[in-house]
Length: 242
Figure 1: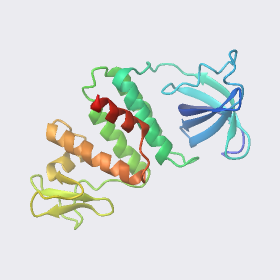
Figure 2 (figure 1 turned 90 degrees about the horizontal axis):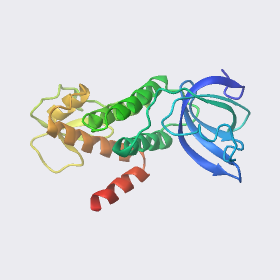
Figure 3 (figure 1 turned 180 degrees about the vertical axis):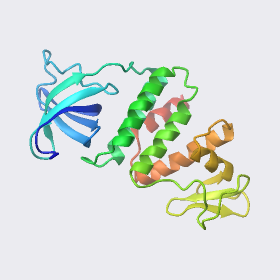
């Protein structure tokens, strides 16, 4: 379907909104069939606007848009329901996901599997107020995002094509994958073979694998973000300092 023709009934989530002129919004959305889109919501900031209360992050919407150019015109928005509101740490994690999508996804590039992973992730966050499985869910989503962008991780073989050894040490190099080290030594990103194998299987039962997986994914995201520092990271760092 031509992105420049009228689109109706498109499932989507709001990622970010920016005030535009006196009464409107530029709405960045993640849609199922068209990927990340920029839409102009005319009059959405007016007190009596029918869509003013609908353009919320983390809520499933059905949208219609039309027009030409980089920013299309939002014609309709309908709330689909079924998604509890995020709160506390889950809300913070949701904003982290949105920042990743805003900074890494190109516009108008469909990623249907990633869209499904994102929707599932929001359900997991809402259903897990204690945060017991949150880190595992975040790692799964980060892996899915990199895979969709063409940066899939090598987690079962080293840079020479050899099967990973659980008790060996590896330096994970961005363009090569795991490089076997003779022993644990200073490197950009050193992880155990077991951590990489656990990450491949989405097995985060080992506390050390959880910590090393988080460190590895943080380094990978920083590399692909090309120097962009996420606001959620700044806030989290400030909270830790407090």
